[in-house]
Length: 334
Ligand code: PMV
View 1: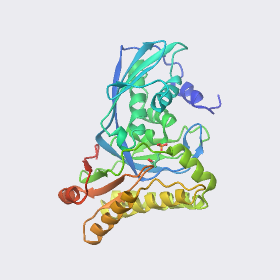
View 2 (view 1 turned 30 degrees about the vertical axis):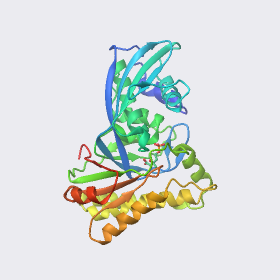
View 3 (view 1 turned 90 degrees about the vertical axis):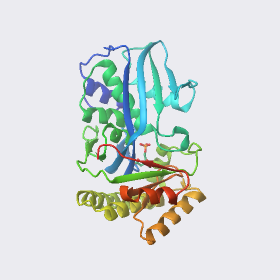
View 4 (view 1 turned 45 degrees about the horizontal axis):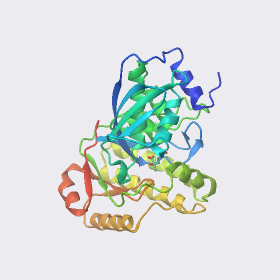
């Protein structure tokens, strides 16, 4: 069987496993993740296959908790205790993903999602959301898939979700196979309990341009995109070597450079993609001035205006006093 669509992937991975629930409801949790080396650009739009590998850090207790149960005929989706309108973007996306797993027409799901990562505060929660849904599906239907297979299924919901199947430092290996069966996340296997990340809030507004649209536009129109794969190859090697050696400056510098290069590729797209707000620039400038003053802090940014700051546990107090609207995170699994 050739695997070309998400439905083919699901059929291939589930093979003869049952599509009948084995429990009344299933609960699952997955952490959000922040990439130190970014995923930006797909080589296959339908299967969410990336142009390059990427590497992230899981955010411990910041993520998504979901409860999943069968529901007569149609889907009901709640977020943080509130039922969402069926035509909302969140429900449309969740329903389209759940379509891949329905035992048959007329089978609905009740999906109750709770985010401990602030959903409305512009921090990516789709990665933890899809990963938690995949774990809950596995428990509801009793599939007992391996983490690697769960990672592939989560990838179909949102690329970065494949990394949220694991705690700690995780590499999403891009793979080369057209069917994406070799494109999944694996733990990096580095323990570094002192590594920390802080979320610095700039805006609570929903992003205007989805990462999917922004990525495609960058790949299709940015003259800088041609150099992105080589940038990632260099930064990823640097970050991995830095992690192995517990060399914080090396990891931080490579992560910051990688994020800024990613945003540079977007800025050169036509029309330009700019997620930054004036306050994002102010925070980065503050961070650079703190660094010149000897504080080891490095910044990274995703498809939104908020800034994430990498630091080590011993500098916690100084990070807290240096930024307004900051949430300190203790990553899990490192
Ligand atoms: O997984 P998506 O489609 O939400 O894309 C994630 C893109 C970035 O957050 C900007 C980078 C990354 O690797 O997480």
